[in-house]
Image 1 (tube, rainbow, N blue to C red):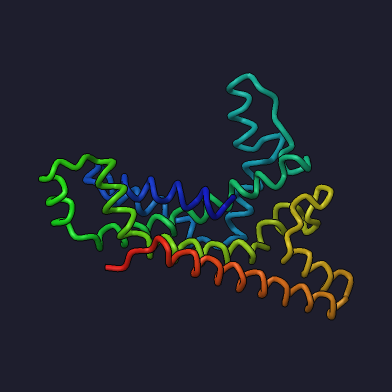
Image 2 (cartoon, rainbow, N blue to C red):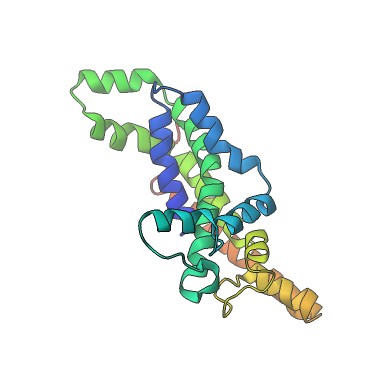
Length: 217
């Protein structure tokens, strides 16, 4: 969820910020700030936002006449709150990389297509997306690998428990629990090899499938 939602939002915002809009430089900085902030600090900030009694989310709900919710204490919502935080934290990285890819597309291609009567959707479909496809594949692979490595937000926001009811316990968190809580180094090593194997396998699959639709200039 984090990989695809962040990539889709990043693509849309990159298209917007590639236009001559007001405060463009400021908006780019604002979106990129969470990327250069440590995950522990970001997790602590969102832990405060989700606090049931006085958090920002509770305040906004009360403005709408709704009661506050213990988001991180409910199995059905705990993982979703961490997903939302990870999307917010990683969005700026995708935007910056996609902006670099967009600015690498030659303007004369758009001008020639526009002279032939191509509209915005046609330009996006037949010029922007094909020429941006190598950047999209790069982000897809890197983001997938990063998603397998998520640990800090889960540890900070769940108090090191991966709860409630193991609803936020990812593979990396499970590895940590086996290695440092249960002191089972062999089992933890096996999990580490599994994570590397899954990441490598998905990367090979993504690279293989990308040959069908990636366009290199």
